[in-house]
Image (cartoon, rainbow, N blue to C red; front, side, top):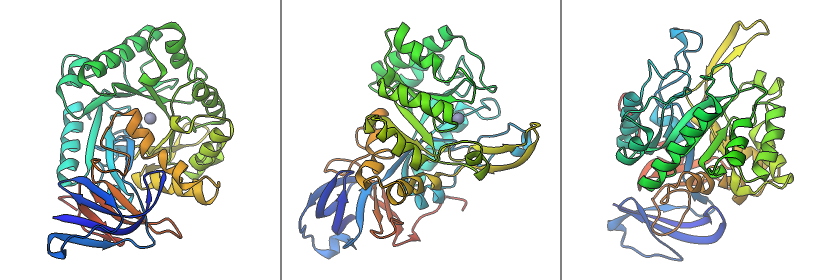
Length: 388
Ligand code: ZN
């Protein structure tokens, strides 16, 4: 069935004026003024006064659950499809975190394939916090070459008490394997790097750029907004050509302790002169958000949500005065380019039919289409997960 969206205000993410969008076969077929198709061949969506934007890409989600850092009882649940839909997220990249043992690559890929069947696009990273990586095939290069959904490695933990304390050489070898596998498979081969609160910060990433032949574009460090020190370091790193990713799932106590809200972090990076193409947001959805007291005792534990992704972008527009087209890039065109997802992140003929319609006044997500299928229409869910 074709879908014809009439009179949408296009943000591709750059502003494109008003036009109609014809979707079919999972692709954007045409974007033109006044497309006419007999009604019996298509579902027509009246988008007058609505903003059409690319479906959101969430490049760091614990789709099969994470956590477990306080014992078995705080392992977090897996991603419900409806969270992605309600968050306007049409593409997720799944990852494993601290626990690469009770969670493994087989389970991660199975969950990714399940979400794909349920209606959204999914990819995954090989490995978890630890180095050496636990891959599915014998090597990371073979995972990238022979498993379609694998597009990189991670989340590899550095500067954190939960990391495997890899040597610089071990980390450099990992980035090299990602580079080689990425080249051979035509994929990004990116290393998604978890940064903790440790004082070494981005040291290993800077050394990769300074001491090896590998480039900054092979690494995508995340949680850069987690404390003021790492954030300042991130500004310098990004100005020198690195990518920086901010995490949208948070707790009030994290912000009280110095975490920089993503909207503010985006404004401050732009004011500091960072290339807007080098900044991204991800949700860390389904990861655990533990709240420890100063004696290291667990006070509370919450779960990260993919529904936190777009609200951080909205906040950047509404509270920090960032133009919608600039703010949108951090969850659309930028991650698509960094992850080499060539059919994602933009509205244009030939791209995948992943699209969100926003209310122009409050920027609420109204309608969500993924791979050409209506998953939410005018605020009403049209699909749900198999067991929801
Ligand atoms: Zn992490």
